[in-house]
Image (cartoon, rainbow, N blue to C red; front, side):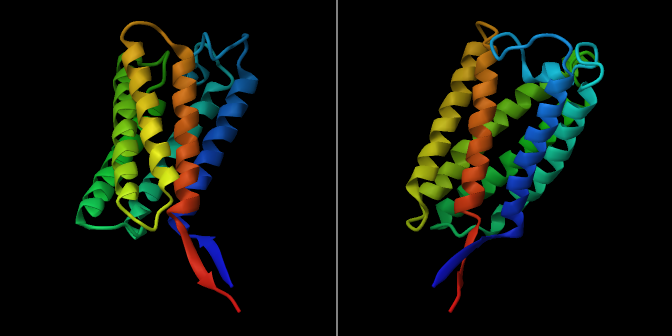
Length: 204
């Protein structure tokens, strides 16, 4: 019968998600004031002036997560995609993903409360390139007849959510938008790891 296992690079996606979630939860536990997705950015948990005991966990988690995500994005070259256009989309998604991961790392190295202008610049960069990653990767998947189409639709939906958050950010501090955008991106990474990164093995 056929069995599936995850490639090493796909496991990097799962590991990255676990690292981010665990380190973020630890940082939240140390946060000294009441918080809410309606009134706080996720970056507030990495702000050493607002979260003196817990900021190190959020920022360290961001740096480690980014490094592991680089491996995940680099490993996407092993994916089986369709035609030449699909391969172009795949390479563009890899580049976008790596730029996103490096931007996320820089935003963690320069957290809020330390250098707000640098943090804000790389935060904008990561939101821009995560959108590119979602669009390009979903486009590559859609052109592959053997890939589950729901994954591609999920990627396009994630990109639309990211775009909507970016537009709203120009008019208001929609804190919940960031939480939703990150949650959807995390779910998309897990979906990609479990579908595109799975290999069939023949077992008697």
